[in-house]
Every structure is written in C-alpha cells, then in structure tokens.
Image (tube, rainbow, N blue to C red; front, side, top):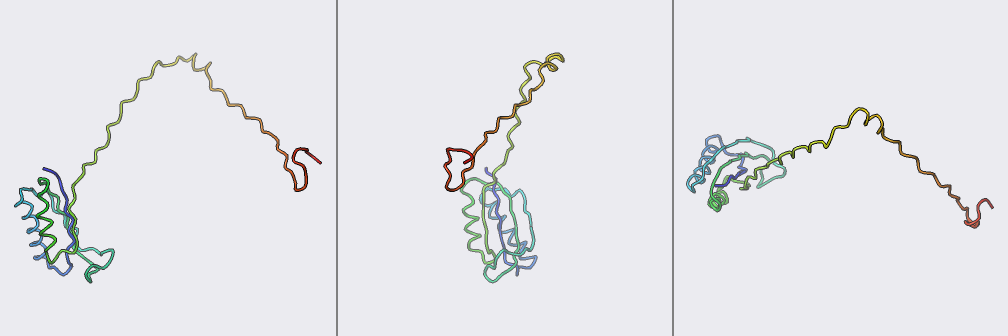
Length: 146
C-alpha cells in the first residue's frame, strides 16, 4: 500500500453536521476500496486566495490514508460529482529522507609540536602593480608623457 493525501476544499455554507457527514462519506469511499484512513486534519474555515463559484471562504480538510495504487480513482470520481466540493487534489505522499551524514575521514597523522612551530603558514606576497598610462584624446598611446 502507498501513502496518499487528499486535500478537499468544501463550500462554507455547510453546517457542522453536513461537514462531518461529508468527511465520513469520503473516508468511507477510501475504506470501501481497501484503503485505511490514517489521519483526518480539519483545517477549518479559511479565506480563499481568489473567489471560487462566488465563495471567498471555504472549509479545508486534509485526509491522510494508505491505499493500493489505482484505488484513488473512485475517491476522485466521488469528489468530482459532489455538490459541496469546490476543489480537491489527491497526491502521493513522498517520504523525505535526509541523507545519512558520511563518517569523517580519520586524520592521517597528528603533527607534533615541533612540526607545527616550524611549519608556520607563509604570508602570500603581494603581486606587483603595473603602472598604466592613460592617453588623452589626440595623444599617441605609445609615448608616455607627451
């Protein structure tokens, strides 16, 4: 089984009982298809970024579930034909794993106190600055100081 998330945006005109009934209906579709609902997160009523079907607010619900690949088609079909659904998306959860830190390389040999004192880092020498002559209009750039 794979882990999925369904984000459902419902109309704001639903009362609490109708909202719970809708969530139970969608959870029931998941379990009927052999899936298992792992978590239902009710985000509540939130402001939409733009107006959808005359609504400026909506109820957001996030359902996390595990199901077989291809079994999400029935959930998407039910969400598509439901009257109270403004928008929805069903996505595969991607587990983000941090790469294991690579073990630090062991130092080759610890320098002795005498070796560190004699091997002081040298200061880099400054590169000589070349003088450049700037020619004014009408002068020959090859002859400096005309």
